[in-house]
Image 1 (tube, rainbow, N blue to C red):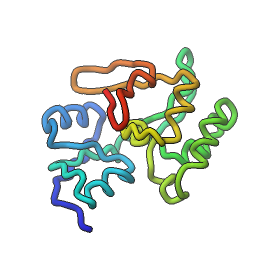
Image 2: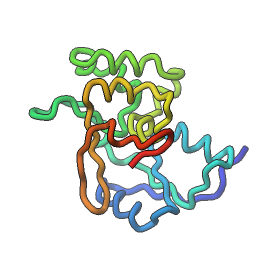
Image 3: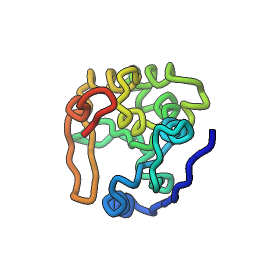
Length: 161
């Protein structure tokens, strides 16, 4: 199976990515790790005209402690970033352990937290742990940003806000 034709856009900032997604609308999809979107495109289940890559947005790969918020995990952090994070291994071992038992090592090297959450697949490994810990999610778009409980982000199988 081959990938359908598409345009590839790689913004330099989060603001630029949000602007691009607003401008391209339903023609565009976000690409981060690509483990799910690429396979869906190859199998014909998805055919976006434009992929907006988050590859240059290094601020989304961080796993850090923020006073008053707790541990903040960026959407582009890979599953193996979670496994190898000394911060998570010290404070939230359950997150590291869940990530360690996900998929094959090759997938953990490229699959991202954001992709795992946004796919909203009921069998996903991270959402139950994060919801049990009371995690919040920050949604960012061209109209600004908002933070909500992760459990409110999921509307049903394969459906999110």
